[in-house]
Amino acid sequence: MNSEHAMQFDADMDTLVAGSAVPGQAYRLRADFVNLQHATIMMVDDESITMRVLQSFLESAGYHEFILVDNSVTAMDVLRRRRPDILLLDVLMPEVSGFDILQALRQEDEFSHLPVIILTSSSDAATKLKALDLGATDFLSKPVDPSELALRVRNTLAAKAYQDQLAFYDPLTSLPNHHLFQDRLGWSISRAARDKGKLALLHIAFNDFKRVTDAFGPKVGDEVLKQLALRITENISAADVMRRKLEKCNDKIEVFRFGSADFNLLLPSIGAVAETGVIAKRIFETMRLPLDADGTQVYLVPSIGVAAYPDDADDSGSLLKVALGASSQSIAQGGGQLQFYSTEINERTLSRMRMEADLRRAIAEDEFKLLLQPKINLESGKIVGAEALIRWHDPVRGLISPVEFIPVAEDTGLILPIGEWVLREACNTMMTWRKQGIDLKMSVNISARQFFQADLVALVRSVLDEHKFEPSRLVLEMTESILVDDVQTALVILAQLRSLGVQISIDDFGTGYSSLSYLKMFRADEVKIDRAFIRDVTTSREDQALVYAITYLGHEMGFTVCAEGVEDSEQRDYLHKIKCDEYQGFFFSKPVSHIEFSAIYHGQEAK
Image 1 (cartoon, helix red, strand yellow):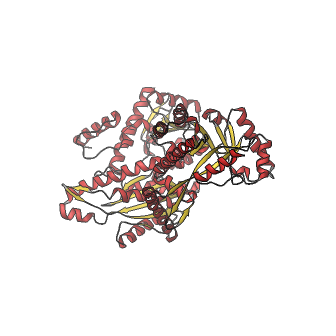
Image 2: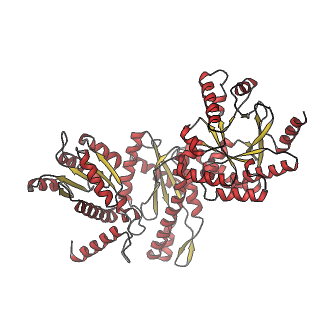
């Protein structure tokens, strides 16, 4: 390394450690590498207490992600599964030595550049030379000095970050390049194979980008490419946060630059291939806005090809080939399309995208209507409330079940305007009731995306202020799985909702986590027993025991207990026998319009 490069290296090392950018440098350091203390440190040592001491030293230096392995035989398996950023490796261990592990990992491509610091109590030069010869990055003598350990780890991570930035990141866009893409794709396929999971690869081609460079030159073309990369990355990142929350998935969607104006998106964990349609839709939408080419607005049309593991290919090379082929097919058809390798998946995803378009039209043209299902007090047999249920009547396809359109609405974010419509319409109905002398509770379902939206509490407060009815008459229903997805956030939101005076109901109880500790923690007003346990409650001893237990414990904890899906008198009679409070279901009434509901209520009152 000459003196000029050495000075640049030292300056960049200071930047990486300090966490600030170098003004005017030819490339931008990725945020992943700027904060080195987010690195995952793996230790392999047969003495657990030694690793705990080292962990304590490093925690004092600000590191907090550790993998401790006290069985050297399993070390390579753990390395393949967890992929740490640095390895601290003891030499003298039974069965498999540190040298054995070092030699094995240097023979595998994915670990050829993994930083390894050897820890040894031996001070002879031969041991250190052997460690370096086998590919060790550095070595430390035991007992380890805490400040020296922290310094060596910091410098090793910083040097690796610098090397990775040069080797694996595109200097123009700062996105991971094709080298890192190949590495990540291979590793993701290996993990999916082990876990019997699915992953998807989207190849995005901007075939008309050449027009920009032909018209404005390569310098302006580079600026357009940077805008393009930033727009895709920011758009995907925003969508991915909610995707991971809803699917309880920790794997981020990764964006790579792959060729001149081509990009790859890697979805390391998906439930169904059709989910990629939602991501592609966002890309198409964001590209409707122009890019700036030296003061001139230009529009670029993406052509997207999708391939899935294991449906379309079982290795990285074949999967990439399939995605490229699908993208080429999209280009051949005029561009601006999403193309799947599988015709069946292609049709299913296109159908889902048509559903989204129809939903947007339905919101704009007010094609929804609200139905009400009565809730009945088991002791008196009287109506004590209603659950608001949305229905969609499409002018072409007729009545569409919520089972079909609610998942699409949830995935695309359309559940937010739809959910607000249901809440406001339900409250309008309550105002109509008040004029008719009807004083009942109204239950409104809250979906996962609604519950975690930033302005849910403000929306409920606004609706209550507008309608001026007793807040306790409004019951917000949410499933237990929503609440336990992010307990701490859920507790804050529930506390804010309760402060408004509304009631909280846990819906579909028994189908999710069903933890009594959660029930106590969430302090709900009502628990609803899922219809799955009511269906056979008169013949199944297991269902009887479960329904009785929920009812008994609900009462002990101060909840109202409501059973859903009651379809005959035998089910109702059993629920009455065990002193369940309320029920709803087709036995009393299917969901009806507010006019029919009022007639049923007044008919009861007249008796």
